[in-house]
Length: 347
Image 1 (tube, rainbow, N blue to C red):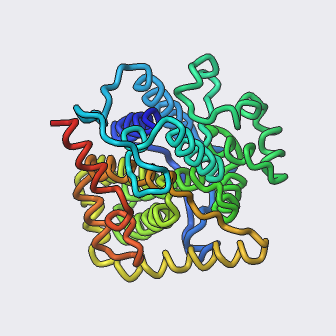
Image 2 (image 1 turned 135 degrees about the vertical axis):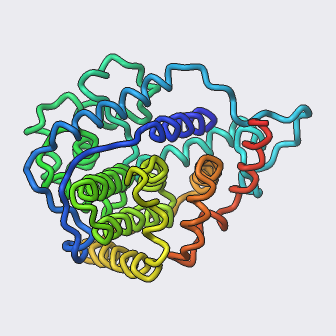
């Protein structure tokens, strides 16, 4: 549990170093029209490939460094709680057996969400510790892209997850795969991919045309994907959203949050449209959505606390938009406790 917390801090920090991302065209008009992405070509372009490699390099090199422990144990050993009691910090509050139970619940939830990090071709010899749950995708990441696409098209979950993390492949197919994974529940890398694609399109098109309205449309869609993930205890979209928008994607011409100030209703409508579409597809396919276990919710709270400490203004702004009634940023148990512990350690 502790290692997973450290991993997310490092990955978030690495992502925040990236100020420019990929070039892709998209068209956003209903769920298949205004929230889906339509590719302008069948392959990722050179900028996309370069940026995927940059992200992998930053994350991997950061993980090789020595990172201080974020949660400082108290001087006096507290009495341990039962797993069934109210607790927030597993490695401090639970006994060893219950820590293992908590870790098992988090691992199961990550597997359900398709959270398995694939290695790039140049990273095959790197330590698996830098790529959480890599064992799920290890047999896919070395496949020729044509074979990987074939397996993904056939509905192989881990082939689909691997393809989303690839720097190559047919973008139209990858867009379709991302939407399928949203419906199936294995949405972690689907959300990451969709947010990065949408925000990079906003930046690229704004550079070319200076069209503020178009940039706003893309920004709204990216926020909708990020918020939908948060409401399902998934930060796959939120992390890149915060990282990219915090790096001034419009190069000082206009601040990302300013584009959203008058877009509350549009964001809510798009969110409702996305949710309705996903729920409708799940009902048609007979998909039963899993409920996150207690340890996974507490683990999610730890991640939200880290992101709130890194991006306090943006997190507050998103919360105040009132996109949904859940307000997971403020209502999820244990967020405040994790923030207090983090602040204490960083003092």
